[in-house]
Length: 241
Image (cartoon, rainbow, N blue to C red; front, top):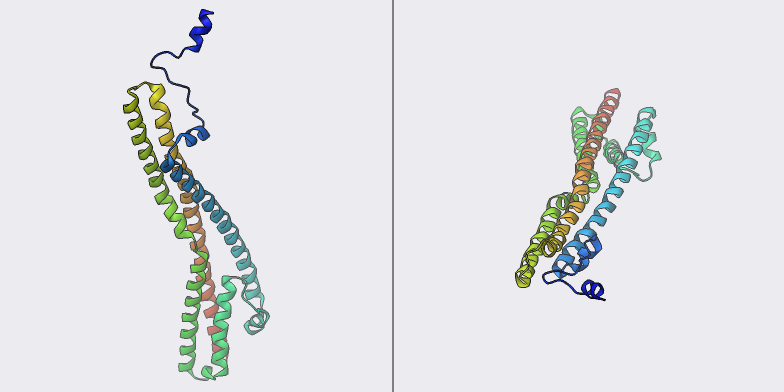
């Protein structure tokens, strides 16, 4: 009888066991801590969606660029290739179509009959190609600013949640008048969970931003090279006329 009574009595200064699992720590957090962690988790899910979308999109763009470059160099006539493109399906085709539109307009207006007109046409086509490249690259870079913001801001939001949780934990310790590890550890672990969630959101965003920025930069350089080749081809056509 006596051992059973002792087992049922909580010793003075002891604390009830605390669930130290991730869900347990989340459930023990206050509204501010929960709002921080839920917000970071939502941002993390959204970030992964952007990453998968960008990776697939860049992969498709590179494949289509390779296909169109092969068509461009194997085509016997730029006018024939232009007539086959009803609607540009990728940025490289859009660059080609914009240049050919200027070329067709200049031809219809008879601007290629004089040397001064040819120089003017080349300048106009070059400007149009650069404008088109800038517009297409702006579309490709959509949401990249969001990834950069998440990579830099998410850790600080998580740190805010940690600071808030530690302050709340210290207030609870002072009110309880107990500084044992069993009392301190749950509150500190709960506070650090916010920083962990912030890093979970920030690390993939940082890695993806660096990788995607490199790939987008290479694709932009590829468009620039294609534009230069296109201008050179048009210049040769002008010399043959």
